Length: 304
Image: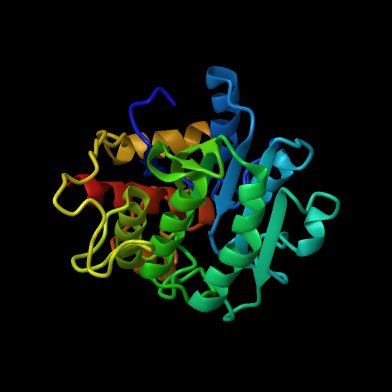
């Protein structure tokens, strides 16, 4: 917002889109996208903000926070029809269809084709009409086929396509589309629980967000075989150091402070397998403790 970057990728944990304005739920304590939207308004005078959510789960918390504000837009593709958290039907947007857009899939029916069709034909046209000043992505990757918690069949290439289209709709590179200034894009990590798939999807997403292309590929509207910026320097990338727990004891103390369960029991075999590591004996097998340990292990893998 201060002109130092056109797009930002925030690698955060835990996720946030299930947290409502009044309660935490579903691994989420704070709704990062919602807080970012309010901060942009208070600090930078931004009025119209859109949150786009391709996570396999519906972002019920974001929808709740955005429901009654005509200058906030929320759109989501997800598995619905009783899949967690049980929200996200088309009826949720009744009377607000121009700025609350839900496209639910049945389990196993969220293919690449249907995903792209939903965004291209149903969501992006409404986003263009809304004309946001800021786009925030609740970027969950648990819709990828390999994810153990998801029930969709997406590939990393789908997230790259999605990211490119967001830039195009928003007016990429600070340019203009439809006579308006291109808006900034802030992307925030939501779900994604298979580490290998999470890494592949992250790379694809950032590639699309920055507008980089693979060798021999070009974006729509470019000559065949001509990548964006051929013969020019690529986008400038600034990496900030991760913020992490100093050690395992600090993690345990942090869980205690927020009232989470720390019982001394070992987690179940399925949870040990899911982390692919031996978890600390000081953490029990409940979902929140398991998730805290998972985050700790992922951060360890990233910084070591």
